[in-house]
Amino acid sequence: MIHLRGVKPTLTPDREPLTKAPPAPKWLNDDARAEWKRIMPRLVADRIITKADLTGVENYCVAVGRVREVERLFAINGLDKTLFGIQNRAMQTARQLAAEYGLSPVSRTRVSGAGSGEDEDDNPLSVGRNR
Image: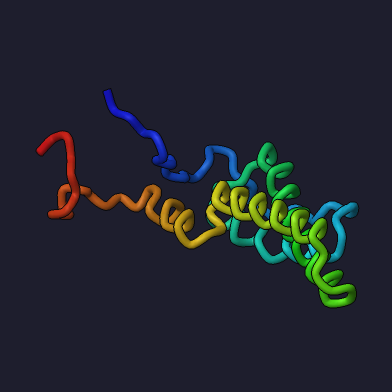
């Protein structure tokens, strides 16, 4: 029995990935829309995003937009305990969703390593079951 606790699966190209970046939803605020436009070409190019994933991407963009919105409020009004909590939760959500879509450094290695065709037997440090 293999235990995978804490091990994230490798992201692989989907069978039905989007081939063109859809426009940002009109209801997103300016910051969230800017993030959508920044990340969507990468997600489409990596072939890991489908129509079914768009709600999660929207949520990621909303979280990033919220972080930026709260940061502007800090600049105007100074630090506020309630706003700090909102920003902190938005940062956590954005970080978690970024990892789901290969938008963080660690998760990008999962995307780029997927389907690379490299034979793990060539790596002397790999621990395999067939050795």
